[in-house]
Amino acid sequence: DETPSQPFLPRVRMVWFFVLVTVVAITITTIRATGQEAVFRTALIFTGLFALLVGVFFGICFLVAYSMGSLERAIVGKEQRPTSPFSDGSLPPQIIPPQRVDDHV
Image 1 (cartoon, rainbow, N blue to C red):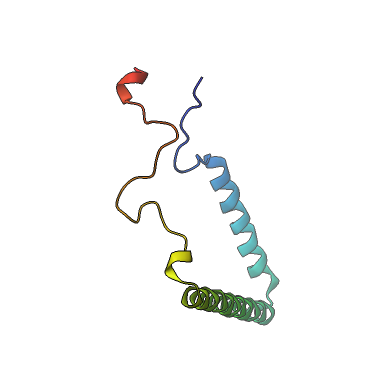
Image 2 (cartoon, one colour):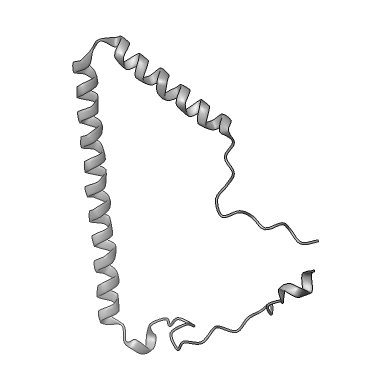
């Protein structure tokens, strides 16, 4: 009664590829049919600026979190830091022991 193993990547049916291509084609056709290049150019500029500002904001958030972690690491002693079970080069204790491949055949 074992569940079958899952693939690393999900299987995607070709119909989704055709849907994506159709949506992109309709979008491009709509943009070309409008004839308002200035409006489209302005929208692209604002979209790019928004993406840039969001990236800068995320970078600042990362730097704040990183500096807080570094400050905590500097304040807390080594004996109070959490350790990894792999730090000494050995595997952690296993709850379910491994099975040999020959046992399933």
